[in-house]
Amino acid sequence: MVGKNRKQGTVFLSAAIGAFLVVLAAPVAYAYTATEYPTTTSWTVGTVVAVNGDGSPVAASTQAANYIGVVANPSTGKTVEVAGTGTVSVVVTDKDGAVESGTRLGLSSVAGVASAWTNGTVIGVAQEAPKEWKQATLDSSASIKLASVRVQLLSDGASSGSSPINQFFAALEKTASGVAGKPVDTWRIITALLIGLGGLILAFGLLFISSRESFFSMGRNPMASKIIMRGLWKMVALSVGILCITLTASYLIVRIA
Image (tube, rainbow, N blue to C red; front, side, top):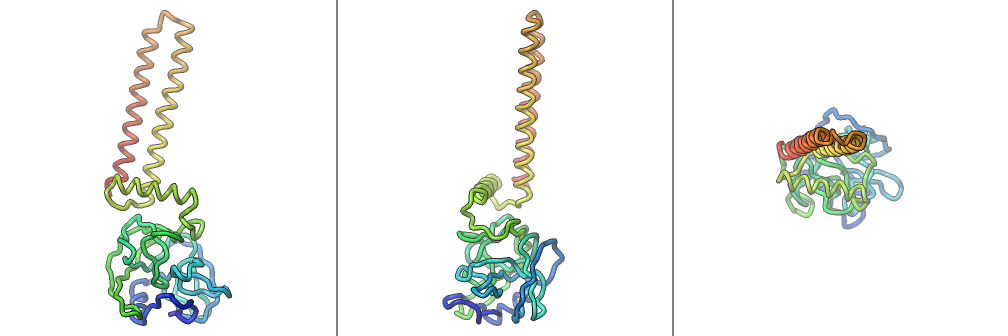
């Protein structure tokens, strides 16, 4: 692996883990944007990468946290292709919590391996649950489980999770997970949010327009106020119906996997 470039205190992967990475992170065709970095080290697909002080790529961890992306293709020994955006396979461990579809991923103490995000750098969101875990042993003789999962990397690269946008999405994901009782895919959350907002805008827009037109009509023709109010109540019922349907649809999208 790339232990020679890590600072003292970084948890090194053993040769056994390297073998597991090769098996777990077999190349799969996903859409991503990547940058090539010069390297003299062999890299496996799915390894989480940072850069050291001289700009050389090293395996990222909580102790080598200058994250740049994830290895997208097997390295040639001269260059390595590191994806910063898009969807790629990422090697993960469950040592910091369960990894499911919708789980936010961050750096772990195991160099080159991602885990459930707890704080610091956010890498992306898992798009699937691990299909098969493999046991591996660290140089410290500790045993961990590894798997390869499809991950949607953050569109703006790594983020600290403390920005207002990340806090908003974190709160949104927690709310959706609470409603569903399990982690929820990012696309489900966004779809449900758009449908819910669309229903609110449409319902309140109908109420505003119908109310304004009804009051103007009653001002011009007071004798027809009963008919106008009857029509207004119909629009109120229609707006409430639209709101209920869209909110129910949003709930079902989040709730039903």
